[in-house]
Image (cartoon, rainbow, N blue to C red; front, side, top):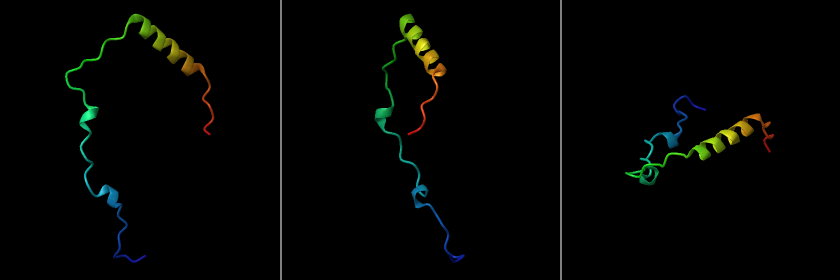
Length: 57
C-alpha cells in the first residue's frame, strides 16, 4: 500500500440524512398506564430478570 493512498470510509463522508417525519409524534399524547398495566409490567420485568439468558444461536 502506498503512503499517498489513504483508507477512507466513504459511507461516513456525508452527513446522516434527517430522521423520517414518521418517527416524530405531533400532538398526540400517550395515555398513562393503568395500575393493572404497571403491575403486569413489573411482574414481567421481575420474571425476565430472574430467568437465565438463552445462549446465542
